Amino acid sequence: MDYVSYIIYFVITIAILVFIHEFGHFAAAKLSGMRADIFAIGFGKRLFGYNKISGFTFGDLPKDFDGKGYTDYRVCLLPLGGFVKIAGMVDETTKDETIFTREPEEYEFRAKSTPKKMFVITAGVLMNLLLALLIFWGVSYYKGKQITKTTTIGHVAPQTTADSLGFREEDKILSINGTPVNNWEEVRAGIYIHTLGEDLRLKLQRDNSVEEIFVPRSRIPDENEGVFLVPEDVRPAIGEVVPGSPAEKGGIKPGDVFLKLNNKELFTPDEAIKMISSNKNKELPLVVLRGEDTLNLRVTPDNEGKIGLRIGQVYTGEIEYQEFGIFESFLYGWGEIERMTNLTFSMLGKVFTGKIEFGKAFGGPIRIAQVATSSAEQGFVNFLYFLALLSLSLAIINIMPFPVLDGGHLIMIMIEGIIKREIPIKVKIAIQNAGVVLLLLLMAFIIYNDILNL
Image (cartoon, rainbow, N blue to C red; front, top):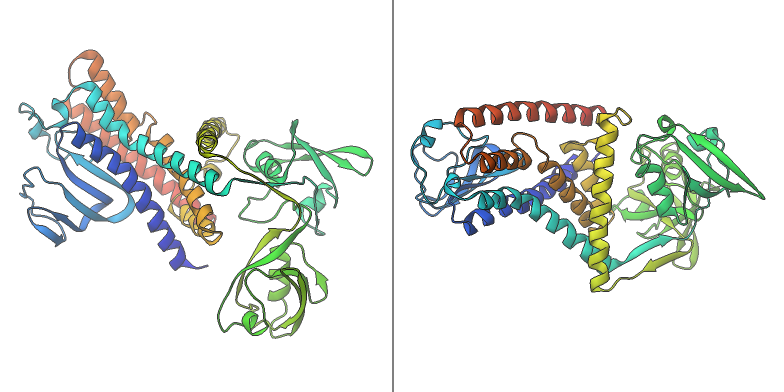
């Protein structure tokens, strides 16, 4: 497990998302004539930062520091979010309520109109939505949509979940819970996305008959835990070879496709890894496909049962690429936002009704680090797509009417607009403090679940 990669990609991912979100609040505040005293990446102790008064400094600023309207741009100790401190706004950083007893200055949040307050508080969510839309738009225009033109199951290894449920090689999947499937992307979505928390009924064509297999949700492994169903024409493929490793010495190169290892035909990365790890210090014959050439090689796993490469999988069958123009790409990107938003709320509903375990539905920093690293290793485009999904999730969660979150602030602003007066400061602070406690407890529980799932 490469913890350094996890940390690097987690920091990159969070830094991008937090910066985009908080820049939305910051820019909206400036456009609305408000002062932004602090722009922070992270929470807690100030590690270092810059402002026009004191320049670049390390550590905390003096308690009586007066920025005179200039923003202090800082990086803080806990890299789990960020914030913009807007003058005259009650939030989770408010410590002294006496400053709200005087008449508000014209540059303060509380002196502005309800529409301007609503604009500032929702700007972070809007920026996250915009980031997701731009990425979906760009990826669909640049790469198009890959369609794996099969729904036929390939290799079914003995004593696997698929084998015990009755699946066979060459079974063609016709529908999942009554929804027809026409390619493997639809099969995957039907198993892991659209039916979260539900048992499955897969209708299959087997030889000249139609069969139905019932699959309890509890029997389906998570995608990161193991392979469930494998399409036909899938083989292990090499993504990276470590310099000086047994793999390099054996002549293996990135892009090679494993066909046979130790005279056994291979279909999945797991099979290749098990074969390698169980043959320490033993020379193994290897057959690989390189371009259009089939090569016979030999490789010797080291004392730890490793040969120094990263194994993924590749589909060698028919693939169709659906291309989009600029306008079509925009519509496709917006369609992705609508689809993922509906899916998110559907998942939340299933969590509250007990159909999905909370720990399975939500991931914390460890889970984000794992997925960010995995997607980055699969290519820059995959990492961007994951970033878009996470940005969209951040927007949806932040607009929820929960204290501390943007949605909670928005509700209070709307109430104040309706009653034509400000909610008492002590009440606001109490609500924010309660929200902070609940949010910290929730984060602790999510991190605990992440650790259990390591």
